Amino acid sequence: QVQLVESGGGLVQPGGSLRLSCAASGISIGVYDMGWHRQAPGKERELVARVTSGGTTNFADSVKGRFTISRDNAKNTVYLQMNSLTPEDTAVYYCNARNRWFAAQDYWGQGTQVTVSS
Image (cartoon, rainbow, N blue to C red; front, side, top):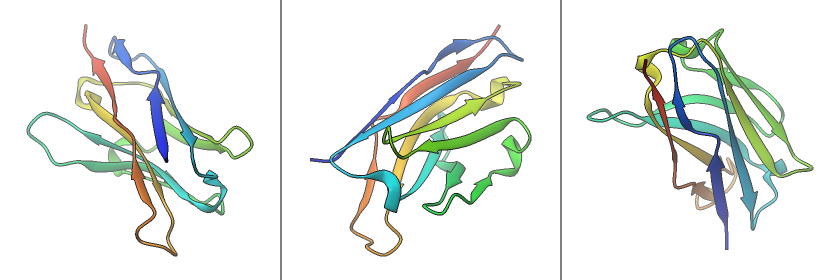
């Protein structure tokens, strides 16, 4: 059984930082493209950042220069470092593991809430 478990969310003041973690079990993330998505109330889920199995990263324009994504294949974990947070970053953040060669191998975590507020 595949599980992606996010952690590290919470309440932070504007300008603050958070580090999200996504621990995977049931798969070896080394062959997966790993992504962080978010969904704010009343909005569609959007891609925030992705790191491919080869290590290439890409980011939504809204987070470029503020967020970084990294992966530790040995720990089967992916991270999202979020700096200079704004209220617009408030959302539920979801971890995703996607095998680009097998469409059925597309897994999601349950999400972690990030709230940016003073």
